[in-house]
Length: 441
Image 1 (cartoon, rainbow, N blue to C red):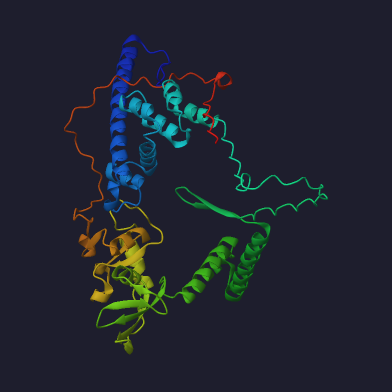
Image 2: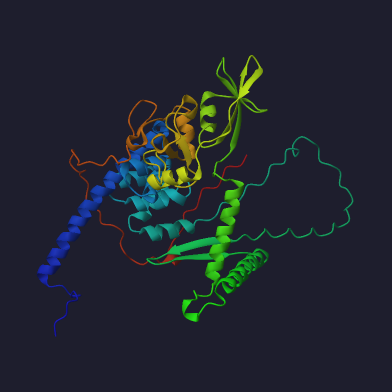
């Protein structure tokens, strides 16, 4: 009887093919490790000389993820190694030579103690990433230094005093307040919410849910109590009560903030000198004035020579429908490489005070970080929104794609990567790295 499952004992031709593929994998992996090592060196240079500040990136890891097209997790690994490249020169050199992988060196740079470069470089030659992380956890924890006594050397030793009466034992510190949590999981059909609340808050939530459930049942009886059974809709469930609770909270929030604006800005503007100041507050720079004027309720008072000459009407800049249209069109920050989706600001491409209209063609969504960078002049945004152009402080256009392209240089010449030995680690015989004792004065 034949079987479609692969044989555990390959024939000679199959074994030769498998060995050839392993050799190719080893060669390609070594080249990849060497390339990752060079990327780490480049990122370390960009970070050390602070060259990335003009790019508008939120962090060096965000810049790596943007420009290389890797995941944020891998970008963080590269940035972590780059920031500690001076502490682990041997490990980075082995990465550059193809002998260690990026994840191996990343595990070391993430948590290893200073001075452990040689120790972990030798261990990583045969240890997997998981084994390296276990070895780092076995390091002895540094003992906290005792607080210095500033009066120890200045005053003479006091005469011995009679022993004081024993003080009452201090009352135990209150335990920190227990906080709840909310987690979600999603499959192809449902989203599962897991809500953990302290008993008191859980009781309040249960009472609110039961109240809405009772209200829905009472309304169902009023509307359908006399209807034939075949025409009655199903009895409201606790899921319906939960949705009603959410809608009630949403309606209350919408009543309190009917257009979802962030703040009301009261500004006094001198029409002669074009100087603005907050109401009963400090003067505003041009950048701050434009920043506060985006996606806000603006109440403007016009002055000349210190005297009020008129007031502008209170203007709702971005209403709820317009903001929903913005969020549907672009769900992330308009800055290339930024994937922020929460807390976005609606920004006027042509500023509102310069006559820019409040419509979809003149509005984009920006995260608070890049919104401030724009108003500080570090990045420039021009439109319309359908053909948005973002440039940095040097005038170079920023694009959302990575820098990846077909290579023009040959791959690095490095030996094949053999990888960890694959043996099971016997931690009983392992000697963890011992940090050197700290010098004492």
